Image (tube, rainbow, N blue to C red; front, side, top):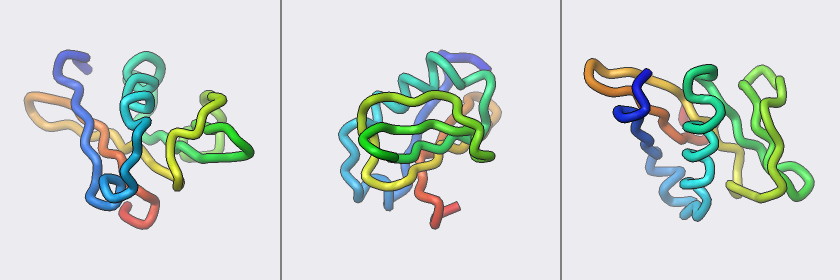
Length: 92
């Protein structure tokens, strides 16, 4: 995976949530998870965001609310670039 070609997308539902911390989530992925995790879950729990691998293994916890709903970041590849799509569980 080339970081120069890593892109981020969001579904219309995530766009409608008007998330102000999508940049923080993208930064966390690039700095900590991009070459390790294909499926990342951001859950708001008791004043913090818990980041898991989708199988409830905790990858990180941050003391900030990133999303107003559970949001998934799902990895994909095209010929010339890699990407994560931010979506809600109901959109998967």
